Amino acid sequence: MIVHIIEHYPKGTIYNLIKPLMKYGQPIVYTPEDTKDITDLLYFPDDTIFILHVTGRELPIFNNIERIANKYKCAMFLHVSIAYMEFQKRFKAIERIAYLYRTGVKLLVPCNSIQKQLLSKNLKSYVIQLGISDIDIHRNYNYLLPYCGKVVTCCSENTLQYLYAKGIDCYLKFIKENDMLSDALIVGTSLSDTSIPSKRFTHDEFLFILQNSKAYIQFSRFDSYNLTAVEAKRLRIPVILLECEGISDNIKYGYVCKDFAEMNLTIKEVLSCHHSSSINQVIEQNYIDSIRRESLLSFAKSIQRWGNNVCS
Image (cartoon, rainbow, N blue to C red):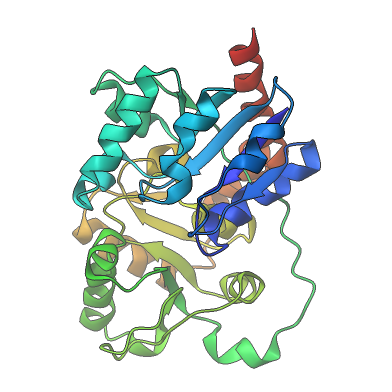
């Protein structure tokens, strides 16, 4: 049996990604930020495989993984890159990951670029293909209509480092240079120091807004695998991303740009020709590819294949 441990707080992106795997018999243990007692985890069957989902934060459950690994086969699923952890100065976390790897804890990653970063530090890992459930927007959120028809970007925190990592400075620059304040929306956080609307929404509210947006764009400097891009592809929304880390695994067709200048041109072209056959073709290709490759079933099978290899 494969059991997922979510060390994250609060219940957000990682939780929403992993929870649907319960449908395929992969249960979840959710550990809030202040959890220190892991005794309950030590009563699972001896053949249990634990996967701890981490972002490099020094949370109590992350510190206790060695105790779990002493009894069970165990892996850490890194949802951020080594480069991002270095940028955030999480050097102790990197040292801990390397130490646990040497004690036998396996490493899982969502893309080839993180696998290469780890390999440069003599750490081998296994790439897991991420995937999501089918999206079913069954409510009409009329009160959200003022936020629809926008050029959407995302940022879940408002710390200076995270804003930089998600390229919000570049998004603001693009919006202001092109006089698009009325078309802009930053989702996931509330920023008081900008004239661009920014707001937190529930996940269902956000999907409604995304479905009714002009485009999803992201100038991220670090992005192991952009799950909002997967949702946008499923909703047949144009996706325009800056090339970094896992984006080449993430987006197989269309608009991955090498720098700000190319992003600027591409966004303007897509917005001005959004009904053209060529753009619709890219949107459809991304949709079909996501259905085929980024499904929840593909995600579950990728994890199960890894589990079978560990047990063999």
